[in-house]
Length: 254
Image (cartoon, rainbow, N blue to C red; front, side, top):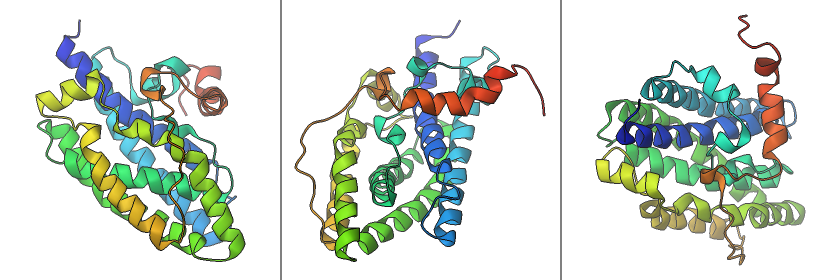
């Protein structure tokens, strides 16, 4: 029987694992579909980086839970309502402008998160964050350069980059909402309050958006629900593809 403290730690680790897992799945869909070969390889490597972080978090979540579930069980054996990833990570890729908009906005958040979590009182979380922040710095630099290149490029690339920002902006507010899991994690010292990342995130993103001659969308609506297991219509098909083999041949080894 898990204690309330263990359950909160499990929930905290799992939500960040889900962010990584779902985003890596979205990025994996782009393999062989990027606009150029070099970018195809870059996105595949980023997907693998994010997946690697997700795997480490899932492994740790399984250890905390203590029910014998492995990383594969947690990734492939849960249903849609059991996933607590941010809605931004599951948004469709759209065109390349939308993909880069989503990636940049999330990378700016992720980089801040890992740089704060290296100070976690939980040694495993701190260790995972220490490796992840080295990768997130590159991810942020990569997506930021594409925002600048497209935004300050041709008339068509500018239009598409702005349209991409407009499409995903309403999902960014959810990243900075503190719920009971975040509050308990921060109070215990192993977690970070998302709200404390907002100002630095806004500074990072607004500077790049202005430099790219783009405009911050005026959409003030906030889409939430991911942390509560309430997902968009795209989540079901994403999980169906990701979990198909595991569910079709349960217990199989390869």
